View 1: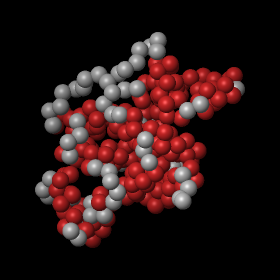
View 2: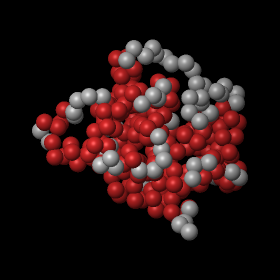
View 3: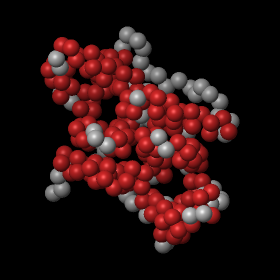
View 4: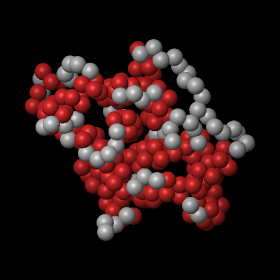
Amino acid sequence: MNRIDKSQETYKKLFGDGVPAAYAKHPEFQDILSRFIFGEIFDQGALDDKQRELITLVVLTTNQTLPQLKAHVRAALNVGLTPVEIQEAIYQCAPYLGFPKTLNAISEMNEVFEEQHVALPLESQQRVEEDNRLDKGLGIQKEIFGDIIEKNRKNAPSNQKHIQDYLSAFCFGDFYTRGGLELKTRELLTHCILSALGGADSQVKAHVQGNINVGNNKETMITALTHCLPYMGFPRTLNALACVNEIIPEK
């Protein structure tokens, strides 16, 4: 199937019948966009449509491109993602983007859920309590990154040890332990969030190794970054690919 036919097929699967509102005034631009994203990018690599839409959601949240985010929440439902999976992908952004940007995305998500008659709040995915969130978070950190976690905690200056505790308890305890998404998926989404942020190369490299440790290979990461490309542009994509190649050199 050529990329024009493929783009039309994929667009219909994601968004249904009809054309983008901007098509009437900018048809050439919309053709370039649709044929590249839906006719080429969606066909590259082995990710399925659900994985691709989860990645799209977190990159659009990172970029704060909220109208497009709302459209892709609808698309995520159309390809079979559950409201819980969609919610958990957006929640996963909080430690990296901060609460205000994540709340902006949650607001857009809520509007779609309400129009689709999804009752809120959803079933709780919390898996930690106040007295164990630090220990549970540390356990997940060590599963992802290994012994370096204890070294980092030990070497942190006394006036910065609280940051290490927050990282373990908040980022990994409050979020990575949650249900709804498996660990491999959360770690791949984190890699995409950090790559889309830009200026976070050291964290991108750490999470390249983290992805390997939880079972996501180099090809999966390259496919994920390729899927991010139309949403975050070439500079950040190439920077993230350089981080991948530094940690996992080509043979």
